[in-house]
Image (tube, rainbow, N blue to C red; front, side, top):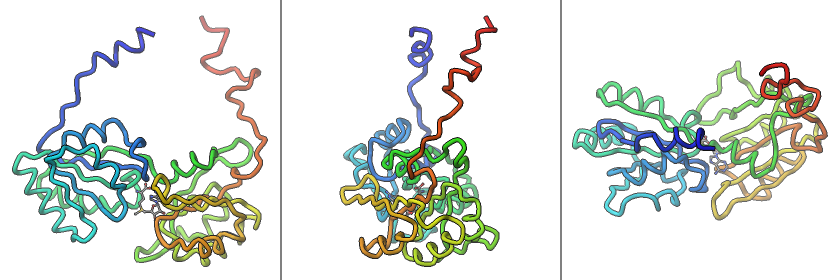
Length: 270
Ligand SMILES: C[S@@+](CC[C@H](N)C(=O)[O-])C[C@H]1O[C@@H](n2cnc3c(N)ncnc32)[C@H](O)[C@@H]1O
C-alpha cells in the first residue's frame, strides 16, 4: 500500500494563481459530486461568479464568508467578463462556476475568447455532467457489450440551432444510448423522431433536477416520454436518457471473463 500512498503525500498543496480565472464544473446538484480541485477553489476564492439559474446553490457552502458571490443569470457576457477582468487585475482569485461539466452546453467558448483577448489566463476544472449523474441514479451502464457501445450527447434545436448534419432522426438511427439535453419544451417532436428508429418500448429515463431537493426520476417506454413530461409538468432542467441498456440486460463483459487473457492477469509474463 505504501508504494501507492507515498506519491500522493509527496504532492505539493494546491497553489492557485490570482492572475487566472478558474472555470469549474459544479456538477448537476449534489455538492458531494464536486471534484476536490473545484471544492478547494471554492474554499480559496475571493470572487465566485455563478449562473444562478442552473448552478446548485449548495456548492456555495464551501465559499469563504467574505467571498464576493456574484449571480450572473441576468448579466450579459460583456458584463460578466468586465467583472472577471477587473477582479483578476485587483489580484483576486476568481472562480466561475458552471453546472455539470463545462465542456457541454455551458457557453464558455465565448467567455474564453474574451478572456484571451483581455490577456487573462484561464483554467478549466471538469465536473460531473448531468448524463453521468443520471446513469448513476438509474443504476445503469450505458455501454453494454453486444447491446450498445456508443453514447450520444445531444439536444434538439431551441434558441440555439442544431446543425442539419446532427438532426435527431439521423442520430436515432444508431440506436445508441442517447442523452438528450435542453429538450423538455420540444419533447413531442423529439419523441416522433426517436420513434423512427428506436422500438416504442425502449426505456427512457426522464430525469428532472438530479441532485436537487425536488429531483424527479421516471422510467417510461419511449412512446410515453412526452406524456410523462407533460404530466410531471417538466419544462426545464430535464435530461432524457434513451437507451437499450435501461431494459433487462443479461450481457456480460469479457473483461472479467475467466477465459479472457487480460494484461494484468497474464500468467505467461513474470
Ligand atoms: C445549459 S445545459 C448545462 C449542461 C451541463 N454543462 C452538464 O454537463 O450537465 C442545461 C441542461 O443540462 C441538463 N441538466 C443540467 N443539470 C441537470 C440536473 N441537475 N438534472 C437534470 N438535467 C440537468 C438539462 O438537460 C438542462 O436543460
